[in-house]
Image 1 (spheres, helix red, strand yellow):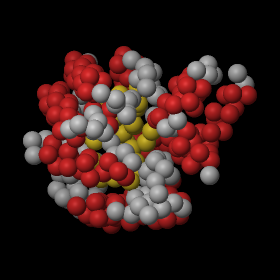
Image 2 (cartoon, rainbow, N blue to C red):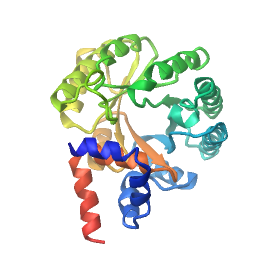
Image 3 (cartoon, helix red, strand yellow):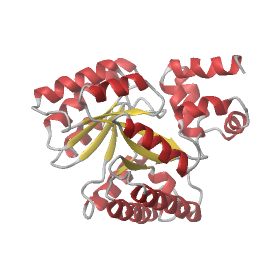
Length: 308
């Protein structure tokens, strides 16, 4: 119930104004967001690399309202990739892109605009020596996102995809995307979805996650297991072993600021670990989804409010 309320709040302009305008919120946001500037993102990547971790950088923004805004976000990613290259960090960080931020949901040729903008980002990533992953958003965007993915992979076969185990269609999508060289990040999902398209109970989402892990590990692609759940991590390790995969033939992914000790412990054990590092001024939607995912995050927020 709380999760559903928070996810609805993530789309509310009124709640957005209240939360963003509340001074103590900033202290909590800093746990999950690596600052508002490119410089802060680069500092985070350097710190992670020092601990044996790699990063996925997400320039926060979604629900783009016009083509001008979409172009600005595209240019911000291109500039970021140039900074990573010049800083010698392209081997330690890729970028993650929400197609809604690139214009996907605009009413007139939004998908075409998002493809063009994503292609420019992929071109910059290839020049920098790194990769791009396309974030997956709510279920209404999936077919469009997969169409864009397939178009981009004609020229950039390393473009990564994201699949959400909570959606009932995902096992089939896993099979479709488990081919040689295909990079797939598997997450549980963080959007409020109707029961007809999604599992709505945690045990069902977990069971679907484990099933999807097995499909991806048995395939010819590169699975990216994005979870903080120790049971899911253990299940992924077992599935990798059963499929004859060695560390480095898959990776674990976690969010910036969550279970940092576990991130470093996995890296010390020889696993490849990538941290999803969001940055930027448009942090509200991302922040609310992080609160919705785990009760511990809500408790952290409330303690900050009480102690302000």
